[in-house]
Image (cartoon, rainbow over all chains, first blue to last red; front, top):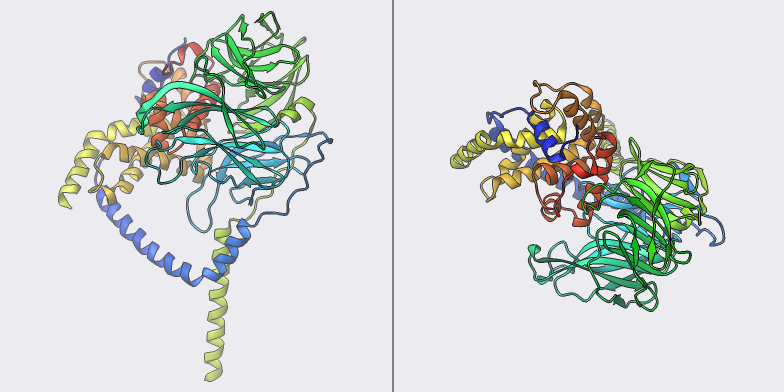
Length: 435
Length: 165
């Protein structure tokens, strides 16, 4: 039997307890508030007293580790298998060196403040895990996208603080961080009310492709529903808008060779030459896809097949084909397994798709002729991105778990207790000496 | 203050049932759902007199509490193996159990996105606003969550998970 998810959720919610008694809740709330105010007063006093020690601890927690020497461009980037969810107390840096993978994870704040999401980078070669300090990113939930060569990372930048004309939580462009030097380039989009981001990807290791929708006034509900594609090149602060021809759908599309691509219909692939901004001929697919990888130099197209549903699950079976006179007939790969997204072509006969496992996600390399597959890497929980150049090399090394630094709050508390105990012993010793 | 307390008690009497339904989907058990709603209500008390819309405020606390609680008590996530605590009506027990176990295996924010989008019927923009995240994050979390639900509950096919156009 198949049923709708909302119907199933409503049915499951029927198991919930019927009602709750309000007895004592108001009193508990007031008591909790008073206790909290008292605690805050005590903590503020303690913080002032310990400012020197805390400052030292803060300095240590923020101090970037020594810069990882960048992996030589000629050396292959091996993919660690598996990857791990790290401690919230890893150090942060803007110069981690070349990265092989990035993902979102919770980061602790010292001395106070709740955890928040941040981007973790895994260094190529050394497998060092570090939080990336991305200036100007949306503070609550940054999303970041690794360049194919792992040397840059692109992320949406939020509106300028205090600008009332821009819709709250909208974005105004992208920033690109050079992972070797820590230099940040901003690529603003010239819009009045801000953008709602749809997708961010790399056409090659130097070109960022942004797809975003526009707001038509300063209200959140003024989203026009229309998207445009913008291109930005590393080293050039100008942002270019592609000729607006059709609404790009929210379907993951990757391309190579300096070609920016997106789906403008369920079966229509539209692409641009990133250098000249000139449109390339559309490609018509025989089957709708939920994700797509395009290799324009050989006319290869791969996708996960199935009905398009912009917000729904993207998993589907792998289909592949070659472009002939603007059309491509997609055939199913013998594997028959379902994948969430096809990420890139590894070579002319192998694909790198990603799939859900029981506890996370895994990248495979699949032979499109036989369906033979090999797992490249996996990680529990949230989605992660592997540098496309590393996927194309399809070389793996055993993953090394990152260290688990001590919670600096406990360290600071321990220092406080030791100092207090030492002071007490000293005072007691002096008073006995006087007697 | 007495007026606020009276308002608060009236609110609990009227809306605790609806809050418990959402909390049950987030927490997966009666006890945790009741704990979650109680904690959210207790946290809402200090600002009760100054907040205009009480239910959205309590629901926001409820969602953030469910995520932060989960971080403190990750081991509780395996508790979905037990059978439902009330007799099942509507869809059969296996169907409910499968969804309950699958929901328990989602990351807490993914679960919150699923509940807000497909149970509370909020739009992506509204969901992003409640959770304090970007619309892009809501999209990616929903995509990941639905992908995993589909893996864990095979009869939730792509064609029967309806989403907004």
